Length: 211
Image (cartoon, rainbow, N blue to C red; front, side, top):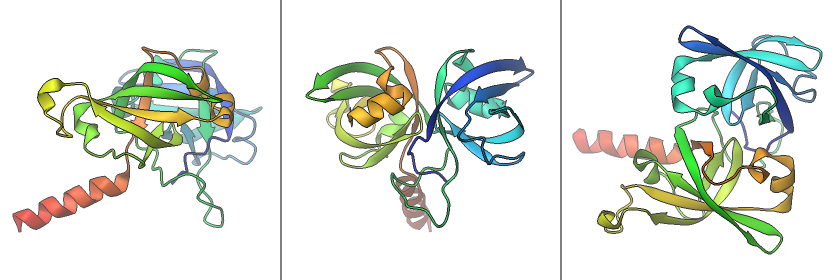
């Protein structure tokens, strides 16, 4: 379990493509300071298992399912990534409950200044729109953010929350400086994880209707 509070900007050292999977090596001295083989580290919101560590770097295997659902397969040496270690049970939940199980990807549509912060609009795939609500939480590339706006990109959707849509999030100076979101531009792809509570509620209500 993670909180969506990025601890460190890491640097991709290598991405080795394997048959149906990949092996990713990232430099991150803070998150590797106490990491061992078998530990979890979130990379741009994707929870991966450490298979090796050395000299402030760690290596993790990325399976095909993860490559298809996230943007990790597009990484290249030199890219910066958001890193977070799992939440400690005796720590504070500074963001929101993030599993590190990316639901899909979105595309940045635009970003505009708003005083000392910036507003970023992100296109959200239809299957995920229904799980997002204004003032709710969403993880974007592993960063816990509050949804400041939501809308439909399909006039035929008639206001229903089931067609192509977009969300807006506001990035404060701290987020702009300490995460990759300060560098993302229109057209770039980001990882999205919606509120897991909404998915559980939908599942339970569906089960109740069928019983």
